[in-house]
Image (cartoon, rainbow, N blue to C red; front, side, top):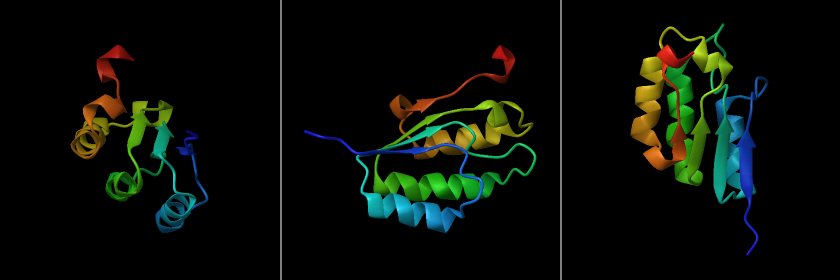
Length: 99
């Protein structure tokens, strides 16, 4: 059986509502966020969490933190929020101490 997935990577010029609409219309079996859910120079954690909250309603979300997350002073807030939204087996993170 063919599986469809959507890969979210650094969609800087797309609003959350447009991105969510595109994801919903494409009907993915999974959504993969391969880092850079936020821009470390213009971080909006509330928007990132709102995106994740809606994305998990479309399909299972798999998340891996990227270099922009590594630069965040408030990474722990983002990580905690995402852990609540995304099942732990779909969530890959890092410790700030490991950097």
